[in-house]
Image (cartoon, rainbow, N blue to C red; front, top):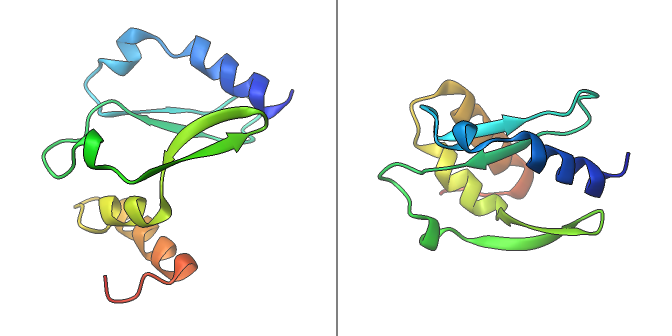
Amino acid sequence: MQANARARAAAREITADDLLGDYPAVQYVPPDGSFHIDILTRLGDAFRFEDLEAERVDFDGLEVSVVTPRMLYRMKQGTVRLRDRADADRLRQRFGFEGE
């Protein structure tokens, strides 16, 4: 199945209850595990949606909005979750975000 069709299938499988639940993020992984999508439903106090640096990218014919690597780094670097800090470190190394 092409990525476009997989993304559309993901959108059909995620419900309003998923988006309004206790957790601020919903992760979708298709049965074949070929990719995952994190959908943030709320950000907390550190960031506002209107302040996010985002870009439009083509996902196999489907244009989607994603935060820039630098924005994702900023969002993850100061959290208490060790996984987020590890993600931030990998982003820093991959994109050269030294001294930020």
